[in-house]
Length: 311
Image 1 (spheres, rainbow, N blue to C red):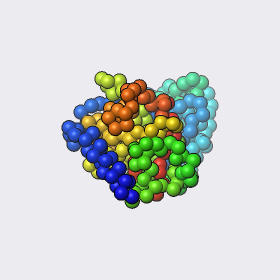
Image 2: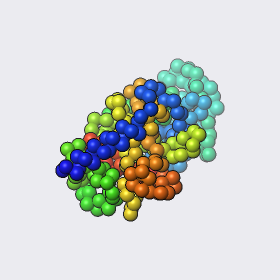
Image 3: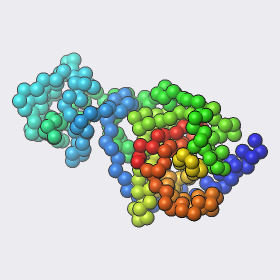
Image 4: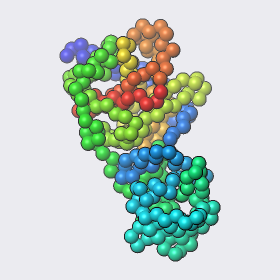
């Protein structure tokens, strides 16, 4: 226990040193990244098997079959004419037309229905609201929220596993730190998340998504994590590779983004602390594609690892 406390104090020192000189103001470094556009119904991602949603001049366009498959609308196609009926609501569009009707009332479209890669694409917001379904656009996460926004807790989505088979990933002094819970006791369980599991709530904090980002001038890789966190300190993460020491990373504070209750934190893949603390001479050669799991250093009932889908 004494060794664990020393390790935790060491981690706090490392995190504090890494944050020196990083102001508690708006982001001064704008990261480069490209987020996938995601459509969520009742806070769960929708899978599109072929044609993905697209953002066309500010309008999110989805395959017309999405409407009948996910919004409960009865779809009728006749040539270029599209009719969608749900309860007492009827939406009518024509491919290429700049106007459409809802219950006979003519309205202007931000973007007309169109054909893309053999699929008929329709404006999602217009269709959803025309059918009486609430829609909300989240620009920071590139999410289209449809219906309820009740994000589930981690235990309701993914079943925790025995951590023993994963202990081989927790090596070195920082591995000893990563495996400890808030009370400095070793975790007995681990929860493995995949990309499809986001958004998800961990310890009352919503984790919206995890993505890859690139530093605008250095070209270095970063992990971009979007959450509802609101504390001053960022969340450390750790990088796991088989047969390699665990590598803990602090937030790159000058790139933090805050907007309407959503926070984006960035953690670098490369850190010279790997050399100074762990003696890794070729620390600059590390690449995101080599990482097998990204761990969240969050107060949780289990260790939380994300299967690296950013390769």
